[in-house]
Image (cartoon, rainbow, N blue to C red; front, side):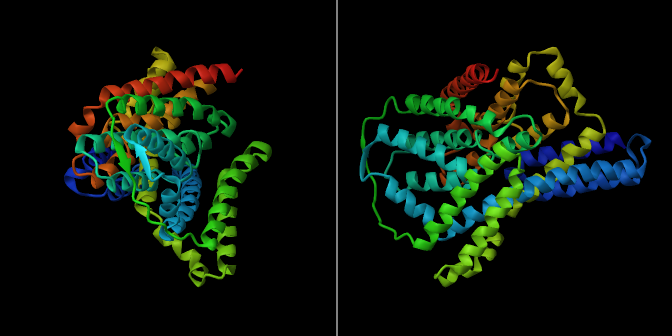
Length: 413
């Protein structure tokens, strides 16, 4: 039965990689095969284990999944509300200047995508940033440069906060790093982004005029945005000071948003609860399916191979290569597999892995959600056109990775 389960998991991961070819949403395939594997584990007990043991193992997996699910659902609901109200688009219009050099715009886009992706999910951050570029009259080559920078910046911005990247949240929830540890990643990650922006902007000399359509921001939407920012701040502080689980604080913040929106004068806000329906549940179902698959891999002993890899080679080198792996294999199952394999590493090494899994997916356009979204919006962006900037991307990734090494060893005793 172990062999059958392993074959099913391999099929599932192949279907994830070839999603654009077979046109079957990866959430459907992972959920189907993930649940099927666990049902088979009950019908044909793994290693002749008792049903009670399998139930215990499943419950442990479901608890981890539920914690991740509820946190992501809370954060996504905030973003869905503000995005539907046009608040994010209006904010972007107010931030950007009327006229700027192409080189200057490169750095403005880099900073915006980096910061915004720390608070919003990568999909929203990519969509908003790409929309800015698409509204400009740019040559194809230049547009591709901006798109490349956006993908890398979005992925880099999320790694230092549990609200910004799923893999960062997964590593944090396993108590491998603290919020204070993760903040160490901010400067090295940003340094990597600035490196890429510098490399991509070397031949840019023109000027760009940005269309300024003044969009009114409703006072009630500003209040909700403030609650969102306060929720993020409270989540970080409450965990550092009182070890309150982030999911609990974020759910509390979401409940405050619902109650406050109900009392605001704008009648549309009274249905704030309905914005939960706008959350991207296909992404959440994908995480559920992947974590079920990785959980069953742990039970059949497949993940022991990861442990052996770290036993034979330095963790610093293996983690660096994991970044390249995450550009081919989805970083969620990759991170889940590493966590389930119970690899022993120091905090500095876990931070380097956090950066590698979060940013490494930027090396290939198919390696992250940001890349897939960008491809769907810019027709000229494909695997080959993105690969032309591979040297720049690897250089920026390496600069960030080395920066994490020095920063972590300097700041962590």
